[in-house]
Image (cartoon, rainbow, N blue to C red; front, side, top):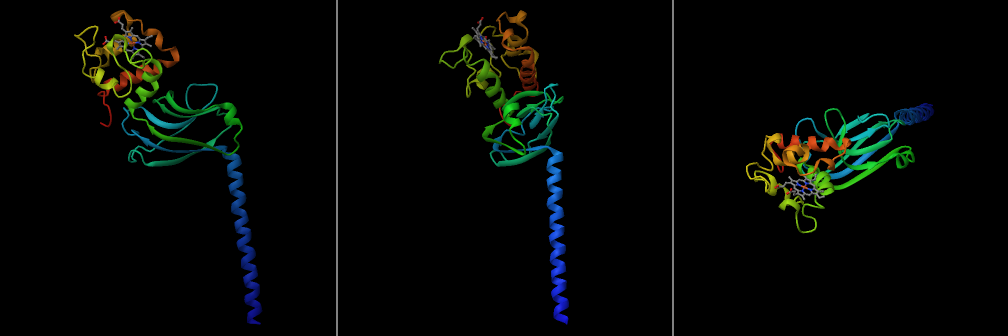
Amino acid sequence: MKNYILFFAAIWMTVCFCSCDDGRIYEQKVDIARGGRTLKLTGRFSGLSNWADGYSVVVAGFNDKSEYAVITKSLPVNVADGSEIVMTLGGIGDEVTALKLCVVNRLRECVVDFHTIESEELAAVTDTIMINAGTLDVGMYSTIQSQVFDKKCTMCHGETGSASGNLFLTAGKSYDAMVNQPAHKNSDILLVKPGKAEESFLHLVLNRDGDTNMHHLDLFSEKEQLSLKLIDDWINDGAFLNNK
Ligand code: HEC
């Protein structure tokens, strides 16, 4: 008799556990449907912690209607350079039409982006979107180099081996060529004077053509003015090459 009781108790418990399990799986499914898609980012990053106040390296979702990210998550700043980061951004709703690994300012506007997944690619994904960023130096100066100088300046300033205005803005050369160095055009002014953007020749050339007459003002569209602010903020923050 005892054996029978044990036998039935065992069956009853099995049924119980099974139904509990069922419940949990069901709940998870409901959550995914309600919460939208998830972005999974992997990569090895360096320089995450050496940004001036107000800037963050993030994964972010944008919609068609505004310049401001509708959803963001910062990459961790307290990890050693080069260690692998795996992080997720959940709850990406249907209104999100672009996902970016980017730098945002205080207003959550995208200042520069390292990787973008646009609408068509995004629309095809129903649950998890993967970004593998590989190995990326996202430090403040490295970012100015890769996203501004390499894209807009080096074709004249050094890429071909010679440099307009005798100024090399290529990677590995640009920092030493500018920081605390007198301008070729006007040796009374430093190209980059740490802490003083408005007294730096770099700023004058890019923002106030009247002072320098060097015809560089058209290089940045209205939308790219954030890049100019980025350069100024880097100078005002101390014009560091790497960590502070
Ligand atoms: C189409 C070619 C071209 C591009 C693109 C260009 N420059 Fe120049 N840049 C020049 C020329 C030419 C001069 C020299 C002008 C002169 O001496 O009057 C110059 C001079 C300068 C100077 C002054 C150098 C000195 O020591 O006197 C700075 C600073 C400068 N450029 C920064 C930049 C930056 C930053 C960018 C990218 C955002 C850029 N330039 C893009 C052609 C270019």
